[in-house]
Image 1 (cartoon, rainbow, N blue to C red):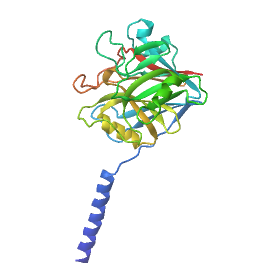
Image 2 (cartoon, one colour; image 1 turned 60 degrees about the vertical axis):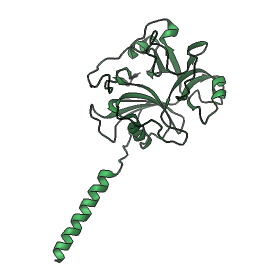
Image 3 (spheres, rainbow, N blue to C red; image 1 turned 180 degrees about the vertical axis):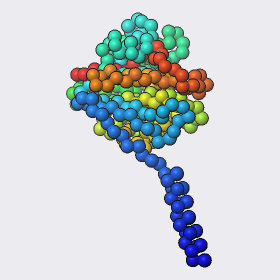
Image 4 (cartoon, rainbow, N blue to C red; image 1 turned 180 degrees about the horizontal axis):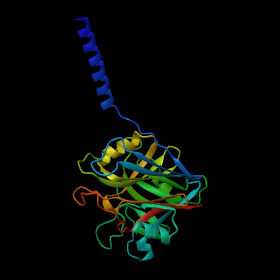
Length: 280
């Protein structure tokens, strides 16, 4: 009887440990590669395996003290939309991501949110449901040269008068650090713009498809220390580009529920607007 009792106790402890391990959230360690002062790159595994692809997350961390940000709009240049790598080469960009979604009407080059670069206005209308605006280029030395402004808890009017370039996108994390995306069964590749607690701007890309709410929570639970997070684009249009002397990364999305439900895309799709960086 005693031996039987001991065996049951050992079995109970073993099963309990397995259950705890299976239900606990594992935080993925992020190993950064320093490319040069103010510029770091990392690729790490998502904590949840995707249905397609390698479940890797690419992140480029950019310190605005070392790099300037540029909004490149094809409509301003009066050219057709172009693949990411072509835009970057023509404008000498060190790295870039999509500048946001675009309207599927007209010339397919108008941002779905407010977008302005200097005197050029791509879309004059602020989208009230988006709530986040990426701002860059300022003459005020007391301000960061690039930031994500949350229009619900920060002074948008002041930012609008302080900066000269703007790109509005969907807010994914609120001012309390909680995910805001509505739950949905749809999933897709995605590219995002983040800002961490120290003010670094993050270019974030994942080719493997995830539900956006799930992916947001994975990022919040990671070591990235995300403070702001803005949705840029999903599916095959999602583009991520790095052209550094010590690192070349050219990645594009593929899977999108209801549109391109496969992992077969191997080329950059033409896009109208990008956010890129150059050395100061």
